[in-house]
Image 1: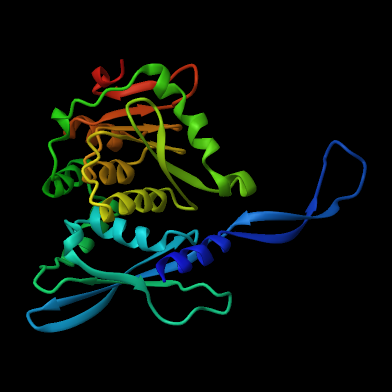
Image 2 (image 1 turned 90 degrees about the vertical axis):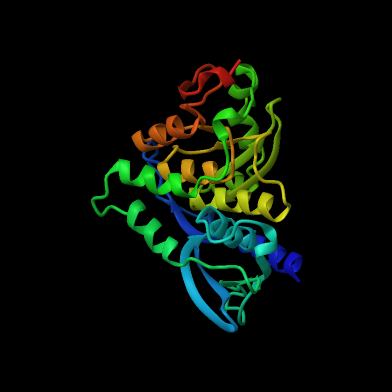
Length: 291
């Protein structure tokens, strides 16, 4: 059922609209044409869990996403938020409720196995530290430190500078929906030879990374000690926190890093690369992993 659902979701990842194309360098009037854009729809994540013998259900998140790989997104979100720790913590995950008028199922329910403790206050604490409510960077780093599970600083992962520099082009070749719309972020998993082994796209850069990490979590393939992550945009604190939770030793961004992203990378021994291009890039922490 999940595979059939995901095929349907993938078909909904793009939508066509009638537009007017305007050429400011020509005297002709705007012409009517069709354009394909990336879909953005809400996804609600519901959590089923036990308190003793009592079963409870709660809506824990609504995120705007591009349909496709929704189950990975839900599981990746729960893992990177520290709600689940191992695949055995999850009894089941699947679509919930009837489809909407457009055929999309915009609710995913994750059932937590009985006996697994659920700390829903963790979600509220993370919202507090990641929102613009005046919390200082030090408080955010301390909150992340509590969740840290892996000794990333000691991971011996390395990659050659030429292999690293080729990642943006390799990632771009794997972005099927971006080719049509030009409107999606991507996260790619790569090995020490610079080979892209997995790509996920989404209108939200955090969603793209949650999908990727969710895939690896469900496959029992965490931590990501033998791989790095490349992202198509900037490196934010939130993306660094997710990479840290996945035990990834290197995150490379096509765009700029934020100050808190750099501080987190230094704190946990993650190699952070920014402004990654074919002919140049910057290394902000642990440069010895780039040969």
